Structures are given as C-alpha cells and as structure tokens.
Image (cartoon, rainbow, N blue to C red; front, side, top):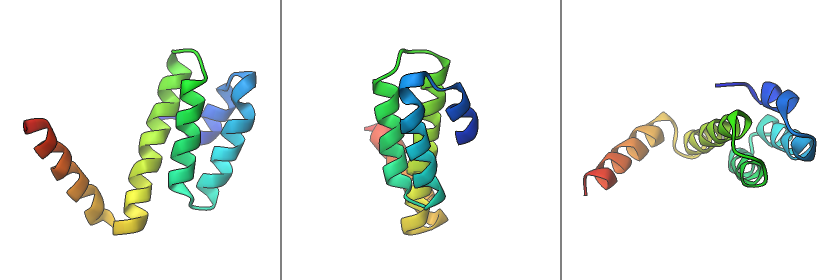
Length: 88
C-alpha cells in the first residue's frame, strides 16, 4: 500500500486539494473523514492504479477509525462479522 504522501504526489491535478485535505484529516486522527474524502476522490477520478491506491487508503482509514473507537479488538470483531455475512 502506498503512503498518503505518495498518493498525493501521483494525484491528478483535479484531486490534489482533496488529497491534501485527507492528509490533514489523517494527521489529526479524523479517520472517518479521511476515508470519506478518499472515497470522493475515487468516484471523481478515472479508473486506474491511482484510484486503486485511494481505495486501499480509504479501507486503511476505515480500519483505523474502528481501532480508534474500539481498540484492536474492534478489527477482530469486524472481521468475524464480515465472515458471518459472507457465509449467510
């Protein structure tokens, strides 16, 4: 997974500001906001490697938001719920 800085440096010109905002949200621990910002960047950009990197960063931010709220146990619980959902 690329770092947020690497994603920012490879960003299309129309997404640079959005990436800077996500970087600040991450720096301040606003993980859910950063995930939302990255998701918006993906939906407004062309499909490709850069969009995939953004989705990976979005998923990371969502996981970090769970850790922030529930600790590492929250990720384990989320994984168990996801497995249960897939099996049904």
